[in-house]
Length: 430
Ligand code: AMP
Ligand code: GLY
Image (tube, rainbow, N blue to C red; front, side, top):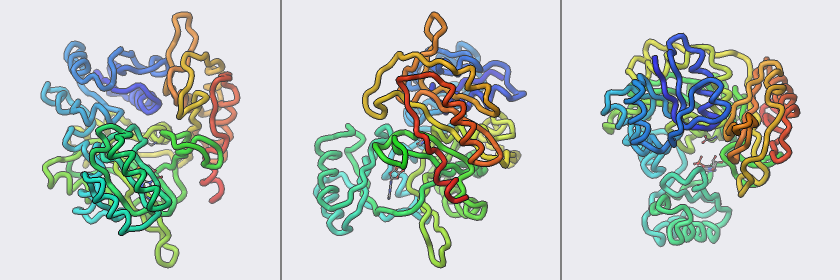
């Protein structure tokens, strides 16, 4: 089978790494890929959002199956275009990807399906949004409706701050057209976790949970990022809680999307807030849905997955998830992201990274590349903000953390940084 993975980050490296082990695989491409991905797949120089270019490439090469990593091509309708060309693909159609593409649409679906989530309002008029904010009080959360590269969420500690946020998003258009509409919602105070399932449009199979560290610096300080590290399992998500999340959050959305005429095929990534409930019983609420694997969550999921990923994604795309039962390593996986100095602000590109071979020798460590390129003379250069995901697999989170940092310390990249405390929450829980 000829397979194309779309994207070029750490998530796509992990997907390619897992797919490359499948007995079903004949040839694997990745577009655009990166220097790490080039070790397991052939990289095709086509941007992930170049829908025309990707469809043309699949036709020319006779690609049988496409796995889409990032949200942008999904929202742009890549899967629809591939289907129209008779090419199978894993990922939602544009209408189904609106679950991630429009926060207002997502909230309405959750509301209709009775999924526990924060109280909210949708607004296209700034004054109406401000009136709602004054009625609700603070703290309160202002979200740009559309895709804003993970930056469109503003947590506001006072009513004044929230009114300023409305001006920034809706009037000054800080996130462009993504802020034409906003969602204003209740602030939820709890512990965050990510939960993943794959859906074939009518049913869902649970993957596993993970937790990530969104802030740039140790102790969860500093600016928000795409994710500086992650681990799985997430101790806060007990097996009972995961079953509850499937029942109360995932299954109703699969049914609801089908009822809306937008059956969802692909990854359902629920961003959860776990709140303390009556008698200390944890209550999960959905903060948001994404229509793809998380990055860097995917890296730890792939390290823990025992089953054939390609077979599972293929079954999902063909409505055959009833045939799939996934097996997971019981052990823990932990990923430390190494980023360029300055990230998530401005950073230098083209700095050299050494020591990657030594790092990959550490027991059960895989260094997933997120933003790298190989120079003509063979050197590996950093090309992005998040650059590497050093991922270890071990019996416990503490062991995985030790192995990951042993590998990190073998990487010689003076212009990069990482957090030194990935996994602290899980380790503190014991
Ligand atoms: P989102 O892109 O919706 O996941 O939001 C980004 C981050 O903002 C989340 O990971 C949370 O840390 C935070 N957040 C979003 N919505 C809420 C909320 N209703 N209450 C508290 N924190 C939130
Ligand atoms: N790590 C969070 C995300 O992929 O959205």
